[in-house]
Structures are given as C-alpha cells and as structure tokens.
Image 1 (cartoon, rainbow, N blue to C red):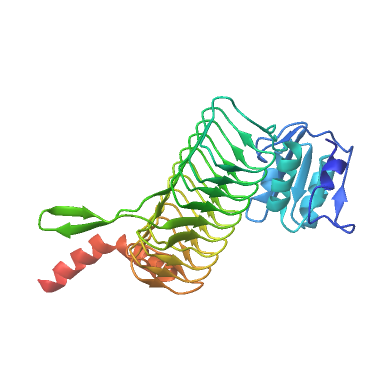
Image 2: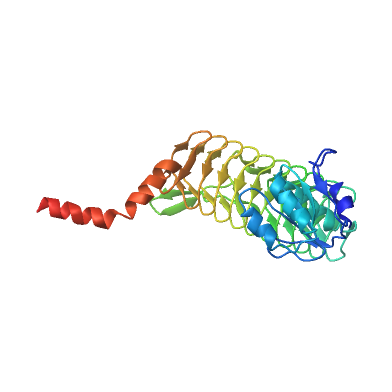
Amino acid sequence: MRFSTLLTHLSELKEASARDLAADPELSTAAAVDQAAAGELAFLEPGHSLAAALEGCGAAALLLPPDPDLQQLASARGIAWVALKNPRLAFAEALEALHPPRRLPPGIHPSAVIAPGVSLGRELHIGAHVVVGEGSVIGDGCTIHAGAVLYDDVQLAEGCEIHANAVLHPGSRLARACVVHSNAVVGSEGFGFVPTASGWRKMPQTGLVVLEEGVEVGCGTTIDRPSVGETRIGAGTKIDNLVQIGHGVVTGRGCALASQVGIAGGAILGDGVILAGQVGVANRARIGDRAIASSKSGIHGEVAAGEVVSGYPAIPNRLWLRCSAAFNKLPEMAKTLRQLQK
C-alpha cells in the first residue's frame, strides 16, 4: 500500500496536516522505530528520545508528532512522514489498514453440537467442536471459534467473537461486539460458601454476568456470576489476560484492567478506572471515576475519583513515592536511633 493511500485511513489527518510524501513509498507492514526497515512504517511520539531514535531509523515512512525539527530531520534523511497530534492512535489505524482482520466465512462446522431450539442469527461462523446449550441465543454476525463452549441460557448480541476454548456459563449475557479470548471463562460460579458447624455450605450462584457493548476479555480471565443479581462489566472496558473478577463486581464504562488484577466480590469501579498489573481490590471496595492504581497496589477501602494510588495498602501516589525514598534510608536511620538511645 502506498503511503499516500495509507494516509486516507487516518482519522486525524486533515488537509492542513504537515507532511512530506518523499517518494511515496510502498509499505508492506509496520515495525518499532528502532527495528523498522525499507518498506515498513514506524511512529514516534512525545516521550521517546526522538531525535536519537530518528537518526538510526531505517523506516520508509513515519508518523510524527507536530515537531518541526523532527520533520526537517526526517525529510533530510529521505523518509516520508506525516505530523499528527496522536501518532500512536494513527499507528493503530495504520496497522489495521495494512493487516485487515480476516473475516471467516459464514457456516456451521459439521462437528459442532447445537442443542435443539437454540436461536441462531444470520451470517454466523461456528467452528469445529463448538458446543451450544439449550435456550441460548446467538445474534447476527457472531464468530465462535473451534472448541468454544456455550452452556444453556447464554445470550450473544450481534457481532460478538468467542475465541477457541473459551467457556460461557449459564446466565452469561454479552451485548453487541464483545470479544472473549481463548480459555477465558465468563459466568463461572462465584466463590460463595456459608460456614456451618459441619463445614462449608455452598451458596447457589444463580445470578447473571453482563458484558456491556464492546467489552473485551483476555485469555485465561475469569468473571464470576453471583448468588443473586449480576456481575456487570461496563461498555468499552478492556480486560487483559489472567484477570479474576469476583461475583457481584460492577465496573463503569471504559475501564482498563491489566494482567493479574484480582477484584473481590461486590467491589464497584467507576468509569475510566485503570488498574495496572497485579493490583488487588478487596471485597466491597469502591473506586471512583478515572482513578488509577499502579502495579501491585492493594485497595481495601475507597479511592476518590481521579486519584492515583500506589502501594499496599494503597495510599496517594505522591505520598507513596516519599515513603519509598525513606524506606531505602531505614537502616541508616535505625543506626542513628540506636546511637541516640545510647
């Protein structure tokens, strides 16, 4: 694809956008800026050591931030470029244009097992050894890859994609354009047991798991259903691999949960919450809109809207940074204290 053609796929491109097509190179793929070679696209964004990265770049074309010095350097090296406010977003759009997702042909594989009375929409792709239980509903345009299992009473709205070996338990409700990746489990029984004199009495888990529109669930992630009511994941939320979401959890819209996050039952997250890797959220904790927890934080109570927290137990990030700096001085401080005591 010619660079000039690729530019037509970029949402931020305007007539006034600064650019230099150079020889309008043919692009076959994209690569990181320090690895790109002839025929490849790369991007730079604020935060890189920009000039140094560009000096050694072998890319045929670049997506640049609006920096005249960088633009001049790229032109001097004969590299085609365009300047955009958000080069990372443009790079995502360019990757999709260079490598468009393959649409699987409609059809149901002969080895698939579909219970009588399942409601099947139009233009479906159902792969080999898929199992769909009684009372389930599959909307138009869904793709279910090989080996996936949908128990009884599962509902998929239009355009959902269920990858190989994912499992959706009874009461799973997926809105439009949800994606569940391989080996994820949606709607498994929540961890509910009542202590008695003779041992643990199981609490039946009869509720629902609702994924709102555009939710994406990573490989190996589990989302539990509650005893009553529902576990609800807000529209546009993106969940990484190996995340555990307990029964009765509610997230707002557009949250991002990184790998190995664990959220205990009944916790509530506001809109736009970001939890970095290995964050733990305790039972019934409350996290406000747009709050951020850095890696390995432990949240036990409430986090205010917009707050950034770190550490275990989680405290405001700026305070945690000061505490971390002091921690390294503890041996010296302890020695001084012993001397003063003497």
